[in-house]
Length: 295
Image (cartoon, rainbow, N blue to C red; front, side, top):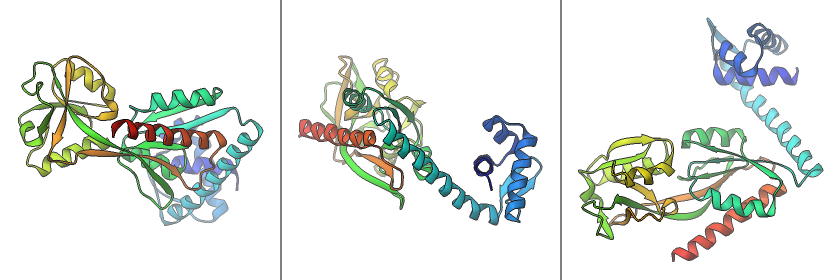
């Protein structure tokens, strides 16, 4: 059994389509099919049910997939550990976030300590982040909401109040707080469903008897303040994502505990480099200082 066979098998199992898997792996379809066929011959059983070019993992395939993922995961951890031991001042930190508002400040502090470490950051929906976490493909995630799992370590680092942002001239702009019921007839700008803050505020609003009406749903939370400023709608914005803008008023929410939990997450079995450990310390220090400021 060859390492290449396992790598090809994992990609085909993920996409369940020969053409798409071949394109992703940058190999020909015939080469990919022959490699999978050799693997099945080595194992003595078919791993897929074939329907044209579409493939579906069968019982044998699903069982073998768990072992193959674990084997390649351990090999990757060994590679990372050797890299860390041989060149501790260099490397790449793999990060995924569902909340990015605090990340620039954290990365700036980390850069001061580790100027040669590179970053690769992905902004993801919660479900996408869970997939990467279970695969052990990222060093850390900053997520709201927290994610639980047998193979996931979850550390709550901050309780973040969610505010209501309204433009200057809005009927509520001279207020310091507002009840959710008063927002029943408003139009909102927000991120798409699947992001933690959006799902949370939708749920809380529904609990008081209304579903928010959105005129804009996007993938960039940082853009919401500009849209509020342009008077396209009002928005639910976490306190850590608040911008000091003269044209926007931020209101507290009355009679509801509308807060999000920000968590630092990592795979329990993933190798944690010295640089990654320092990053974790900086995250803790940053949010501890932020908590003190908001008391």
